[in-house]
Image 1 (cartoon, rainbow, N blue to C red):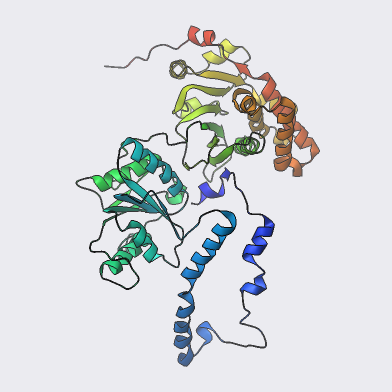
Image 2: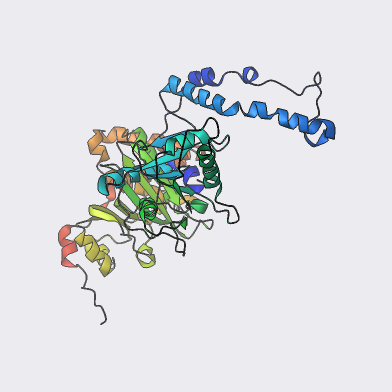
Length: 476
């Protein structure tokens, strides 16, 4: 999963250390020292011809025990914690005619899509998350998918000269063993149709619409046996619809900034406060390339009362902060803004009419049509006035947004947290991220957040309607 997994902040509930001591046990009890001065051995390429093959084949007996041992350990973990884990994790496969198979965080996104497809399209589709690659759980996979008539395997790689990509290749072999009557396998008299695809290479986005396209491909009269999603290519599947599959009541933010402004760190701080102060489930992650400083970056945040299953770039959002004044010139940063949503604009101006007039005409029309609330503040000025260290002035622009977020979003009021307790939580989070820089830096950041919270401007509705932007002229 690469970048998306390593850079995402989410809620986790870790097992207690005492329980892990019981579950894992002492290392000396679980492993036997086979190499020590009292028991000298030769292994591998230093062995001679008369012993190497015998030793190598003798290992198979012990490798054959790995799968049942692993399943037993997973069952024990379930008994201790109540958290179900297995070598394969089926989802809504009991009556499924079509199945999606894969591994990693994109499969959790697919769970939400499976629910949407069943509810809105009436298609009996299910999902299988393969959590163990070695030992390959052949029998478990066949048992889970035996009633499906079509299966699409989605992998984060492409190996052009293989018979199929690795997971699909071994799945075909497992079903072939079942059909041919290999002992231990479920009895089958037919093979389902198999389709294989590549998605998410290099942490490229995998969206809800991509999984819908995969299901539609299986149902097509002329399906592609190999496909890709998420790119423009002759092998890519067309996306018929890309729905919002977030859980009801979710609140999402997509920010547009510049590398070096501190916005990515601010997003982490916001997620920390939402989780620890408001008691919500959170998911926060950035998107930027290897270039980092000076180039556009995007960051995402979702807050919900329930577990957040969607792991993809957000197209449906309630709040869009524009830390970068050039965002309107680079793309359409308002794409996916919900009705009655909110937008924050970085601006050096203090008159609301001037701030609104500086927004491009097409964006003004869009915001009025969406009935959006528009806020503004000069975060650059605040950062310069607050920062005690010159090298932190640019990065402190981002932390001002934390105050803006706390002011415009409903979570403080909904959680019943007082302003005093709110800023205690803010200080705790700031110490977590900036404490190693010293007390002065923590206090500077706290002041920046406070000013963002208290000095924020909102563009009145009458000001917006007084200057809506001219109608767009289209050449005939």
